[in-house]
Image (tube, rainbow, N blue to C red; front, top):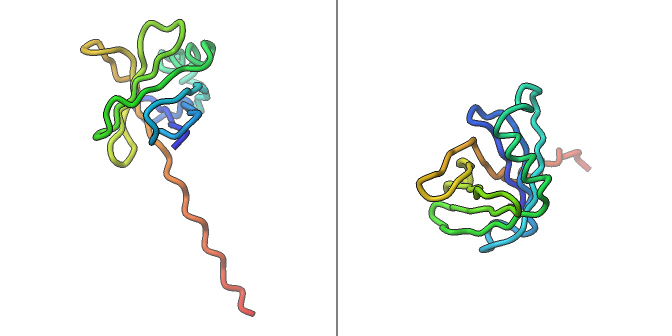
Length: 124
């Protein structure tokens, strides 16, 4: 659980949050990679938020709740906190702000590891 996929509200891929340690820990560091897959997403507020955090460098994350998982991310030079809220399936949303001044920006999810493909029986 070291990579969180960040999407817009419609499921358009925006980028990643890459963590130094798994989100099963209580805290850690992370960096953001803005990598929108569709050109029309490049000039959006959501991608701009990710670019700002990428340029700022390393951010710090802290788990504030486990059921559901709630994480705050603080980035040097950024006044607004970022947050992630994930359900038991590790799907949820991300946004900006603190307390009652929170705005959901898009979807967040942690990809489950793919099961290894079965090796075909070639017979001996």
